[in-house]
Image 1 (cartoon, rainbow, N blue to C red):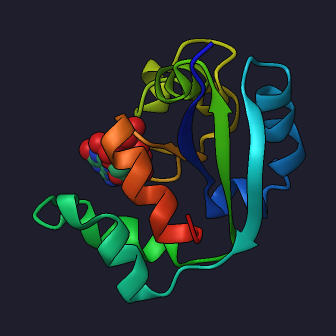
Image 2 (spheres, protein in one colour):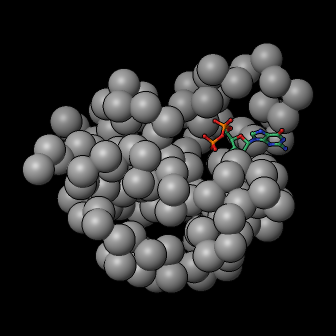
Length: 135
Ligand code: GDP
């Protein structure tokens, strides 16, 4: 079995709402394995760098403000098709469109405060993991 990696972030609203355990349970009940995890916090320049591809979007400032509003938990998840599997577990970006039972359908508070981030390709997984971890 090929083991791919992906980066997950449990976003500030989910940490504030004490949903870390619930979200980790979703990962543990899936085919993915938690390889590394840490509770951390982004400052403004780090959040701007992490979301640099969205710099021209109307929601960019709100997103950076939200992502710096409190602690986050970042995790490296490992497993077959890790990127796709994590995105399936997360559900759609817009929680109103997220399939029932997905993390975002359960724990998102809004489009911005949508509980989790997940890498969208193996290439971004690689650079996002390097952003947070020494590997
Ligand atoms: P993701 O890969 O599903 O997280 O989605 P994107 O990479 O497109 O967007 C990054 C993050 O920006 C999302 O998870 C949301 O928190 C936020 N976001 C994306 N699109 C919108 C939008 O249209 N409105 C608002 N308010 N936030 C958005």
